Length: 238
Ligand code: RET
Image: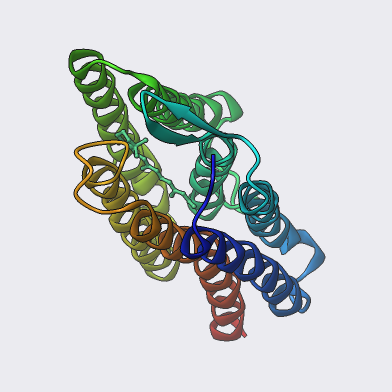
């Protein structure tokens, strides 16, 4: 498919933004203790995967026309891997390695249910995008939204309860970052609905621009916020 220069430019903004984000997360995280570095590596994995997806899309790879509308396959593949990783990075805050009071099976059960629901959300969202007919599209969109509600339920339920048991500082940190991320998550289905995937009230250039900004906030800025708040927490501990 022929991409306009607005679309391509915004895809490059996404690519370079993710690269800068990865570098900043690395530099800011370099002073964290070795035992805390896993937060940094998770955040860097998220921005790196997104950079790869944006590079492919900016080079017009993996973009298919379905029923006269574009489908960005790389975007769904990116979300499929990175949205579970975003949930896992919040999970790491709620169940820190040094305060391991909860059994491994219980932890696995909680995070697996959030990750599973998240995967269902992205895959059925892709099915909605792939649907030619109106009824199929609505069906898959609704299934994806229900899966999103399950994600919200787990993250605001069991995972939040664990964070609350850690004391005021970590509880507040988890709540703030959870609210930040979930507000962003909430905007995606709305953008999808008004974009070329849904009713088509915004053009492709605007859609790609909004997704680029949202992705940068949910990945690069989110990673930077996690690393900065962990550094801040350590400063308070001292
Ligand atoms: C879709 C459409 C179908 C309904 C729903 C959706 C939700 C998508 C979400 C995406 C989040 C992406 C993030 C990317 C980070 O860079 C698939 C748009 C509910 C929540 C956070």
